[in-house]
Image (cartoon, rainbow, N blue to C red; front, side, top):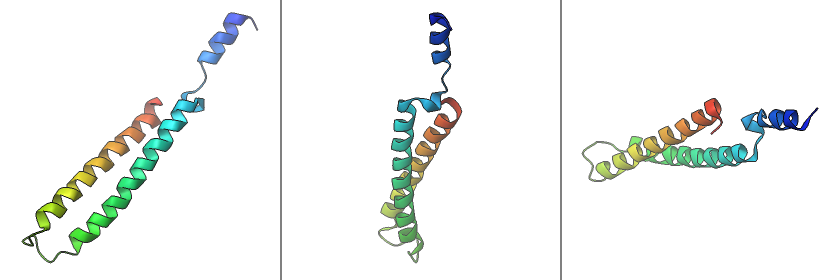
Length: 86
């Protein structure tokens, strides 16, 4: 194989074999897992409330919505890695 053919073959390496892909995937998965843990904690707090009229309800609801936003964000990042490799 000539040198240009070797370079061309190297350029066709799948994105998932490159180290940056795995570093990014591990980072995003870790953040996604953290958000899942936070979601479960705030969901329990929210479902444990007797009424939306409790004084702490607005704060708990804001935290719940923020966690859902984080989950959406990290899910989208994982989907981007799945489809495009980064």
